[in-house]
Length: 524
Ligand code: XMP
Image 1 (cartoon, helix red, strand yellow):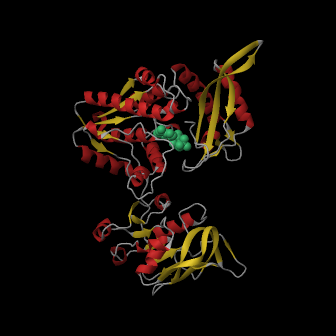
Image 2 (cartoon, rainbow, N blue to C red):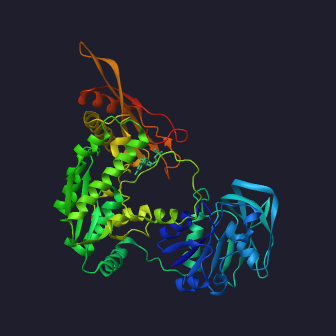
């Protein structure tokens, strides 16, 4: 396995994802872990990340001495290169040219890291890489033993290597997709230079995870809040595989789920996988509490609070249960590690309805804690969950509660559910001829939004005066920024006419053409 030491860059997670895509297991830990920790981790290789403080002031951040004493290969990226340079006897100075964005890097010599990896070559036969750079400092003197590996016109040392010791460093970011050969470079480091085995595949992982869950829980019973989302579904399937009937899932229907969701969850888990599921129809209670409330944040709070109440009550009946299983995934773990900078303003409180309080008095079982989302999906498929379920778009915890603008009513939820289902069905059924993928796959999130205003229409000979829905479809890789999807007109046309014809009560359909920022993905 590979150890990634995090100096606080925004993109450290991407390093881990690229390494794991090469089927090598790796973990991210803060740069100031102890020497003993590094030794005990026993990595096959170490990667030093970049830092968000791209300036000189951060230069007191160091890697533990053990990194240099272990005798394993080390790769420094951006700030990680400065740390390597400074700690091994080189010099780093602020540069006159700050470099941000695309750059073309020329490779020097034939290092094991970059040899034969290139985007193009110059007339003079130099290998060139198209990369993403972001830095304000430069290595001005390489440490003893290092040779030049790469350079750009404004950054003389864009890469350096001491091949005898297996030390490599690059100023650019191989982990971001803008660096076209970045994946190849990181894979080369992990597999060839560190000699790590590419044995991290989800099918193998199941046995290991199952054994660990059995050991952890012993003979105890476990409960799990099943939402129908990817993470809780995969966690349920995995824990069930480990302990069978000693797992009880609690599925709370808050009345704000998608069309047929409750039935599909029961069919999948109870009927097909034979998982014990308690389905609680709490829609009366939720909708009752929400009556008359139109403030988005207040709605979120009520839904969150009500969920905890219902869940706590049901959990209390399962007296044998000692454990609460949750679908926490690796990005959640790293985020809460505190290494990340906190956002100054709360745009939305993002209540995750799965977040349950400690007062339940249960021990936490988090079997997906070390997996990225794409790995969770792979694991789901390996556990026999249907592809469509595992590759579903995300659905917010408060559900339709934040997609019905203003006050939530059952009538609105019923109309919205049907309109939304038509939209999703058409997205799934419309294949883009260029990519041969469905528009559901080509979008990251798509849904209908209920607008509680009435507009005039005409149907047959009659006048109608009914509600409006907006369609929203976005493309994004991280949900922090998003573009509205350029859906084909023909698809929008079909969806619109089907909704208006099939959902009595809606006579107008609009398409949301706002990107995030400044709009958010959800309307509330
Ligand atoms: P926004 O609307 O902030 O959404 O652009 C970004 C992503 O977060 C989801 N979202 C939520 N998820 N509870 C959740 O569990 C919430 O309260 C919530 N609000 C937004 C949204 O669906 C999108 O994927």
